Amino acid sequence: LERVNFVEQMRQAVTTGLAEARSGLARSGHDLEALEALRRRIRREDGAENLFASRLASRIEAGNEQHAVLRRRVLLLETAIVELGNYRSEVELISALQAAEG
Image (cartoon, rainbow, N blue to C red; front, top):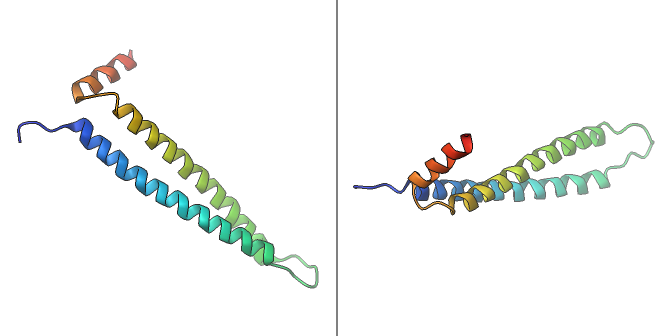
């Protein structure tokens, strides 16, 4: 093993992370859809406050925040793959990073 292509290894790691992030995003979306469907079905006949519905609404709000974080992670990883595609070697990547630092 004379030479390790660090850029390719980083690209592979980012690609793996992107697949995991996309999977998590899809799961999160399905979970939120299921919670929303459940929330729409919940009714109290006496008109009093429905504690279950209130708790579910809080869970949906937290889930929406988590979903937004996952969406940003996917976008970041997609950008990282594009950026890594601009470099053929770690020397080029390091030079670009040093130039960006000023």
